[in-house]
Length: 460
Image 1 (cartoon, rainbow, N blue to C red):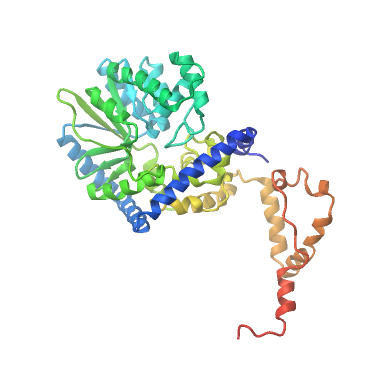
Image 2: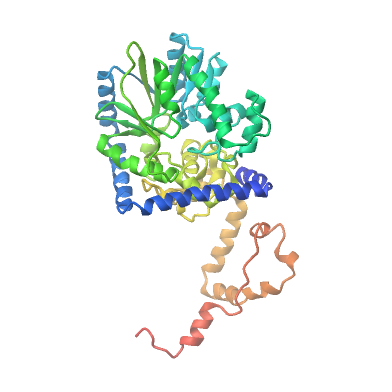
């Protein structure tokens, strides 16, 4: 039985050159991450420190958030709390409406994607401009991001050139990245100057200082927050960390894990409003407190949104971000989707080989693959387990429960090698749809061992 993910993945794979390019491009980013990690002798110690620091932060979240709010208010920041996406969007709209905002520039924020802020504001007459280049391209194309760090990684420059020619009358057929970047910069700078307010997300919220830290490579967050006097920072409550010493740990890991850079081009700290202006923080729950109560999956709150798990995932690289039904794809998205609505997003758990590469590269050591395995074990109680797989598992259990049946099957497995191909590759063999079955050995290992070690005492 095909899932939504498998059907979407099959569609993605029909364009073989695009699929090959996507796989290779993401793997290059993974290799850059590996190269950077090898240049830091204390890399594994940093990962453990980051893991421990996030665990401390999550288990002391109440006091850290209270400290953060107090410090922020002392700095002149207006702090809001949102229990869910609806309240978050209403708070943003009320702030903008009270200042008669008509044009609003945004830096990249996965939280606003989660809350579906853009359509909410646009429906109410506010012109929303995404200022991250990748996000702006996708906004003009009217499609969502396919990666949390490199949102337009699946779009080639030829498509960008055609888009800019249509929207901004650039030179037709000019695919030069420098030319296209300059065209985008020209358009966006006008938006920065003419906007009435600006928003950014937050990578980290520092409890001891009341400031929000944002890491970018384009400087678009700084442009928006500098040009406008009305500014908003919005972030999930799990982004709070104790102090600047903790920040030093995470910034050494974030860019290296995300894009293979020693650091992002800009690491910006926002703590006070402009003279005569306003700075608003919106701290959002939207289900995060429920995750805290889930011991098996609480670690997902450690995520610093680097995207390393996507770059290494063999399924994501070969199926694309749009094959997943949750708005965040890849291993972290599988887990977050199940925590959000398991009956809606359960099909994504099949998009995993359980190779655990995601767990191995995660900078904060989230057990991503292990969590996906646990979700799979809980599909039956949810009533959504695959019937074909359950039948196969029962058959395997019947064979493996008995040494006689197991050895009988192993000793006769090589008979499959001589069977006519249609008997092996048919609708009952889902594995064989895209791959060849291995050749079975004529002699089992058990039989070989008994014959060759019958009279030997190698291990005495």
